[in-house]
Amino acid sequence: MMLLFDEVMDTSRPTELPPDHPIMCYFRENDDMRELLKEVENLIQFPVIKNQWYELYDKLDLWWKLHLPRKQNQLYSLLEKKGFTRPTTTMWVLDDFVRDELKENRKCLMMEMKKNLLPHKQVLLLILLI
Image (cartoon, rainbow, N blue to C red):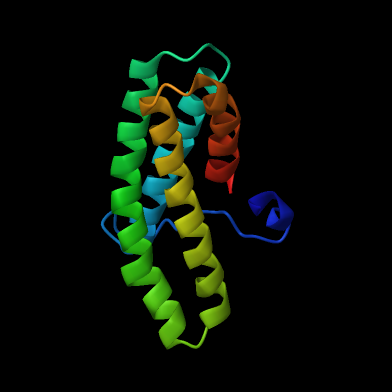
């Protein structure tokens, strides 16, 4: 999705903000997600080894439990106070979708549904790229 806006979005990072500024926290969290994406890209190439996937899902859970509340409590509420309700509605729906897919993927892994896990692995990669 972000590729659609690649040419018009300013993706530079502010240099004058302190490290503990909320915007800098978002940048760090996004960097962490990029690293997790690399792990997903690596793992989907090989047969499923459950422990590797459990470890990855644990990392995703930690990231998601930190990132989602921060977006909901800081970003979305501020945007809505300023009258930007449509983007936040879309973001809420997307967040719910990603959370549900992560749960479904973990469930498939736990139930050893390897035949269902392969499509879910690819979906996981796609949803995390959004």
